[in-house]
Image (cartoon, rainbow, N blue to C red; front, side, top):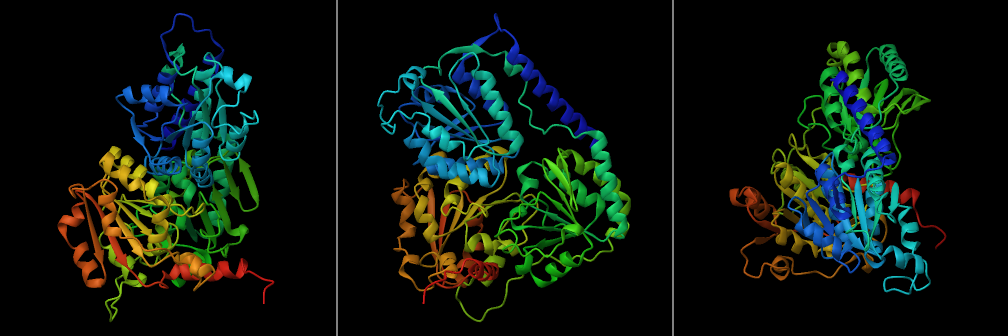
Length: 599
C-alpha cells in the first residue's frame, strides 16, 4: 500500500509537469473544441455529473452547451445561495470529485457567496463559474445592468478572492484551457473553492483539446523521501518512549483530503484506540470494536474524556480546532504529548515538518507501527453505544429521539444534520458502517442543510449509496425551504425530519431564553410538499408525529423505511428541550461570549 501510494503521488506529479509543459507548446493542427466544451470535458474527467445554479443573461450561452452535454445534468436551483449549498453537499459525499455552481455576473455571484465562504471555511472543493460580460465590455466599462454603476467590473472578483483559494479571470481563448486546469488543480489539491469568470464572447471560441489528454492531478505532491523517513522514525521513537500508550483522534481534514482509506489502514493495522472529533464523524466505521466515540474536550462523555486525556501520546489526524469541534477549546492535551498529521505538513510535539502530507505518510507509518498491535489491543476502549432510555412519558425528548433514530439508520445511509440541535444531538449516535455524516459545524449557516441535502442525495445516487436523511429545525428550514421543490423535480427522495420546537433553540441557549426574536411563525409543514410541486400527492408523503408511540410506529413501518418517495416528518418537540452536548456547549460559549456592561 505504501509503495502504491508513492507511485500514485509520483504519477500525479508527472501529470502536473506535463500540463505545465503543454502550456508552453504551440498547438497548431490539434483537435479544436469550444472553450465551453473544454471546461465540461475537464469536469467529466473529475467525475462531476451535476451542475447547480440559476440561469442569467451572462451565462445562458454556456448553459446551452451544458444542456446538450449527455453526462452533466443541469440542476436549476431556486436561488444562488441554495445552489452553492448544494454544490457543497455534493462535494462532501462524492469524494475525490468537486461541486460546481454556475451563476451570473454580480447579482448571482454575490447571492452565492455565503455558500462559497462556507465551503472555504470547511475545506470543501467547489468550482464557482460566473458568466460575465464580454471581454470588450470589461475593457470599455459601460454602465451595464448588474454592475455597481461606477465602472468597477473587478469588484466581485475582489470579493471572491477572500473566499476562494484561486481565481481565473479568462480574457484570452489561447490561455483559457491552461487557466481552467490551474484552478481545478488548486481546487482539488487544497480542497477549497475556486472562482472562474467565463466571458460571453469566449464560450464559443475554439481551443485546442490537446491538454485533455493529460488528467488533472488529484493527489498531493509526493513527500520528500528522506524527510518523510526521518519523520516516521521520530514518531516511532516517541511511540516507543511511552510504551505504546497511544490514542488516535480523527478529524475533519482526514475526510476533506481524501485520506479515509489510509486512516482505516492505520487503525486496523495498529489496533490503537480511535476516537473522532465532531467534524470527523463517520470517517471510520463506528461499529469498529476499537472505536470509542466522539471526543469534544470537556463536554465529552466522562469515560471518553478520561481515556483520551490520560493517554501518554495522541496521534491526531486532520485536526481542525474550532470552538464547536473542541468543546470551546477545552482539549486537555498538551502539545508535548501530540503528533498531528495534516494534508500539507506534520507536527511532532513543538516541531513542524512542512510539505510532509498525511495521505502518503500514513500507510508507511502504519506498516512501521503494525508490530505494536498486540500491546495496542491491550488498551481498553469503552463501548460506543447509545441505548434508548426508558422515559415514563410520551413527550419526544432529545434524550429519547437520537438513540431511537439511531436504530432506524442502515449501512450506506447519508445522514445530514443542521447546525444546532440536530448536529449536536446526533454526535452520540453510533452510525452504521459505510454511512456518511454531513454537517457544517464550523461555518454554521442555518438552512445550509436543505441545499446540501439536494447535492448529497444526487451524489449518493451517483455512488449507489443508501437513503439520504435530513434532520433540521423548523427555524432553519424556513430560510431555504424552496429547494425541496428542486429535490422533487430531480427525483431524489430524502427523508426529512423537521424538529418543530417553535423557533431557534440553539440561540435560546446562547442568549434570549424567552425573547420573541427567537420565536418563528409556525407553518403548515405537512401541506408544504404539495404547495412546492406535488399537488396530486404522488411524489411525496408527509406526516406529523406528536409523541413517542407515533414516531416509533413510523420508524418501524417498512414502507416508510424503504424511502421510495420523498417524505417529510414533522416531529413535535418541547420548546426548551435540547441535546446534552448542545447544553454543555452553550454553557461554555455563554461564558466566553457573555454580554457585559448592562445592568
